[in-house]
Amino acid sequence: MNSFTRTDRIYSFLLWICCVCSVSALLMYSVKWGPRLTHGFAAYYTYARIVLDRSDFQSVYDFDYFNARIHEYGLGKITDIANNIPTNALAMAGIAWMRPSVAKISWSMIQLAALVLSVKLLFSLYAISFTEDFGLALTALVALGRPVYENIALGQLYLVLLLLFSLSLFGIIQKKRYVTSVPLSLTFLLKGYGAIPLIWLIFKKEYKTALIAVLGILGIVLATLPLFHIQAWITYFTEVFPTLGRLPAHGNVAYQTLNGFLRHIFTYDAVWLPFPLMRLSETLVVLSSMFVNVLLIVLVIRCSDSSTREGTLLSYSTAIAAGVVTAPLAEEYHYVLFLPLIVGLLVHAIRAYSTTTRLDMLSIGTVLAVIVMSLPLHYKALQLAPSFIVLLAYPKLYAGIALLIVSMVVTSRMQSPAAL
View 1 (cartoon, rainbow, N blue to C red):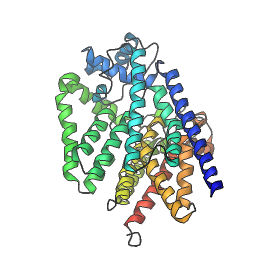
View 2: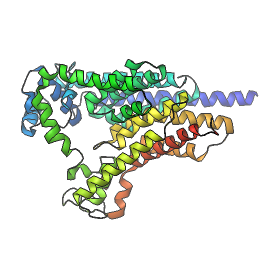
View 3: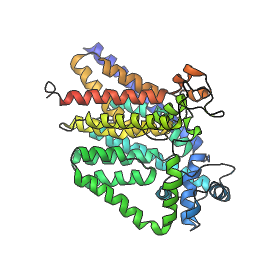
View 4: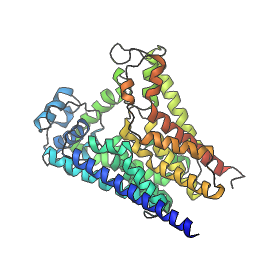
């Protein structure tokens, strides 16, 4: 017994060291990248700055106008494309009055705070203690995850979206409509995310909660019309939105989505996509992408369980994560939105192991997928790889789909008579 206790203490001590080192590495990385101006941050900052300066926001989707503002605001020679929803400008409105480098540092601090609060909420939902072995291992995993690093480096919004989705998940469990719906409205207004969780609410007959989310979106859009002007919305929905995920460049392997995958292997373009596996017409590629995405969404919604607390947590987290792989465009930093699902599936795996003292295939699949999603893999180097080799260029997408499948199987079993 004493030997077991001694071994257990050594194991816990090593986990503490691993956790401290992981968090320290993330903090040092944040300090290094904090003042660096990058293209993602430049777009968000410029959106907000145009509004604060009361410049012509109606012209924000003009490439030359937008990049002229980027350079005018002191963001160097960065070039970016304005393809975000107009209300995206609200994200950095509170810091865009600062000089770009100071605003970037401030935004890094906001991102880290959002990450900490998200993890705290998720740990609370699953009754995980930061000081227990599993809590230490999970904290180290979060701090080492490549999607988190990508968000910090590029000044992206997805750690803030993670916090909003975690709040919405908390509201679902606590049965608080506004805590569920208002964060959902904000995720849509900032980045266009939240459609699948909204469908989930409707499918679960949470009509009032879904209605509050929709009214929140419409209310904020109407209230901010004097800032963005109706013409900006018209331009976005007639010229920008229809092109998302449809251009040859959107078949780049950087976009780890079903749409990007299908576009890469079935579309030919001399510059971006010179080696398709099979050349299909544009119409057929678009229809195929729509069919596969809709099919996945239907499966995610249908294979969900809300009869138990764990089932509700997993199925709503699956709806959140499904928004990433079905998005028109989603790079690696989007995959931080898988964190609620990752936590839920790892908790399920640990509990299953404590009961049976063995890892089943679902648990093994979960662990492998989480490892692939967390590692810094150089898949972008395969952009111009010939034929079948390019199939190796989508590790994050494969890992994401694997986690969705595992979650659907787990939640489906929860609904079966045997499970009940």
